[in-house]
Image (cartoon, rainbow, N blue to C red; front, side):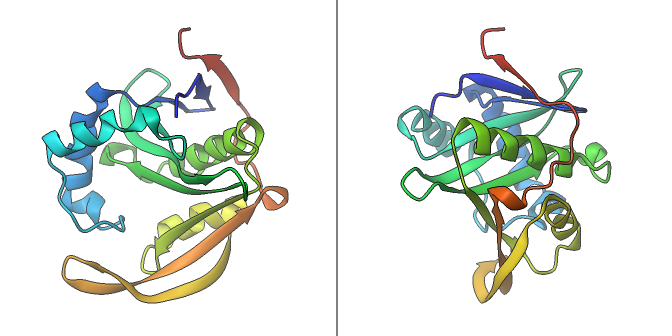
Length: 190
């Protein structure tokens, strides 16, 4: 999906993901500490990730962003995937790859401005995700925003050779509790 906006919050900015950002994405997704928070098992390779990125322009079911500090330091990636226009739903993801930015409440803000954008710009009515049951930090983030646990997917994925449980969580538009005060959209060309 072609994203026409950069989203600016209180402490972070979300800008459309570029091919040059794939080096950081691969580095972050392959970091052992970061991987403990993810629901992925494969290790990322630069060439495959670049090839994957080139397919995004034609994919109307995704909106991917690079997360930057307001002074332009890349800190992670986020987005909405599995965007279902008919049912007005989307799955969300967020990876803060720069560990120096962990524990500062940025995950809450990143999700909050992304969700406002999804609800207002894309007309989404429900955002959902699968999160690890053993990741209390992400659960605190999503709970602040209004998410509800809709179910437990028992031993649903194999990650690092271990079967893990996942929560299926959902957020309805009318349940959304924004966790940001600043929300500005600027065109990508600005």
